[in-house]
Image (cartoon, rainbow, N blue to C red; front, side, top):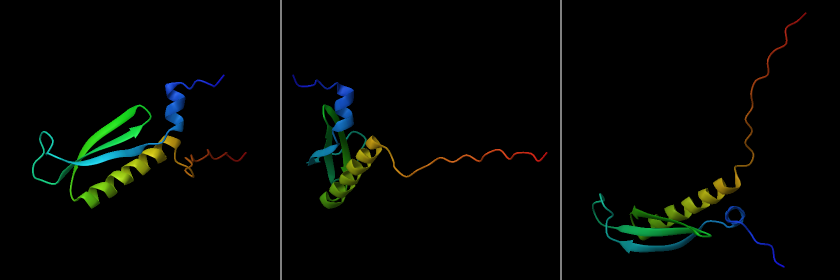
Length: 91
């Protein structure tokens, strides 16, 4: 019998992926032209946002966001929080 994964376990194993980028009208409160709507997915999770710029710069920026989300998901490596030790008094 195959193991059944919980949503929390699935979220730990599935990476964020860029699903779609498409031209869009300016979002509420947005002005100007050159807007794109993007969708990032991770399992059943969906992130939808808007970004203004050329298709090339928007695509590059959203790919960077996906990379950062995946790095954050697995934790940052190589960082250690050091605290100074208390000096012992001489006797």
